[in-house]
Length: 107
Image (cartoon, rainbow, N blue to C red; front, side, top):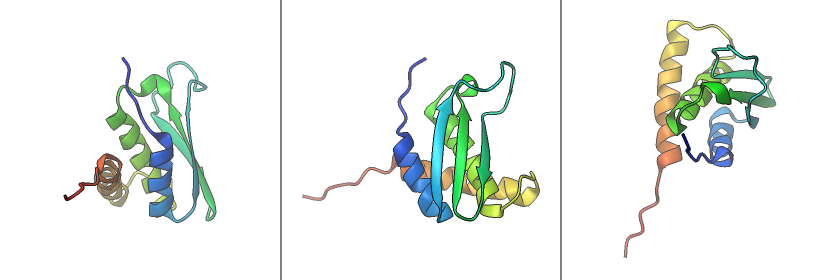
């Protein structure tokens, strides 16, 4: 399966949402059998999102994984509460919309 993603574009979107420097890494370094799509580390200045390429099948999977980790950053927690799930869904829609945005030129 081949798909194309612009990680720099995602990085810029997430940096604006989180108001901090963000690094996004797409890697095969996860242990075999690790079912996580991504992990995140963060502080008040920067965040590092590492995407597990073994569990990603589409651009939408990457956006979902990034939205999930961005929710952790915004809420400042690694918990998966109802509040977290609502934020994740909100961020997925926002990031997907901004990533897919195509400027229309009016002539």
